[in-house]
Length: 164
Image (cartoon, rainbow, N blue to C red):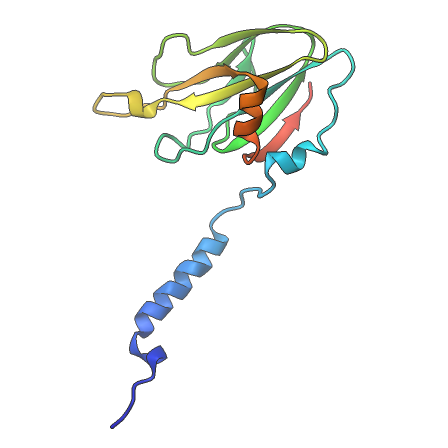
């Protein structure tokens, strides 16, 4: 009686598993550095300026779109799913907006910053709130207090800070 080699029993399964592992390894070029690790080396806020952090949870069931971010009508970057970035700004009032296909009440927020102050602007996706036949990417800005923001962004990936 011949004993079958367990490796030769299901060569198609082994081949499929190997191919899927190979593809998974090549699938993305997402930076792996979390914000908490990168924050230690982030430059201090320049003298006489303030900082605004933009961040967004990774919610693939909501939307993976990368909508534009605006400060007082000027595009300053893109909202990255699962990412955090910042922008150094002069002291003053800023209207923070994220591009959105869907409509929602009060999608923008206004913040007034003095030199050395920091604001945290979370971009939230509300695609699942759309009850229409076609889902539109709907985004809003939520200003978050530092303790909560620090907890929320600790393991998000750093997508780079950008000074003026």
